[in-house]
Image 1 (tube, rainbow, N blue to C red):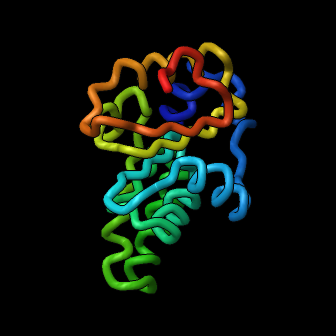
Image 2: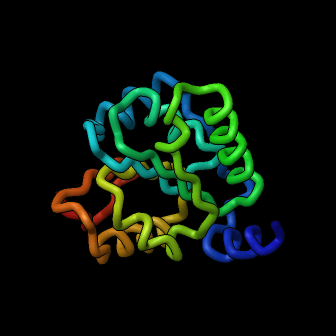
Length: 160
């Protein structure tokens, strides 16, 4: 929507040209293996696009829930469609483990705080936006005692 574009462009002027996809094998190696998503975990993709990484996390791990947060209305609608297809054609109960939220991550702190394993494709994020995301994650009141985060770029100052 136009309001999505205005919000995105205000925080990231390169937003219209920065959407990308991960190959299935890259998600397995760079995201799921690195995060070690275990049974009962809540996986979260910040900037989940069409939901492919979220769906793959739900399929390939024993996470209790896989959550995607996406600002773009169009991309969120694609993810919601994937969930509907999973409900119609997937294994019983699979779609119940998927949650897609259309929101700015800075307005989704309640949802993010419930996550135990977070992925952030930050490759094309401007430095100032990446710093804001890092600050958000540092100040989060997490529900779990330990949270794992994988980012494609270093989140400077985030504790290990």
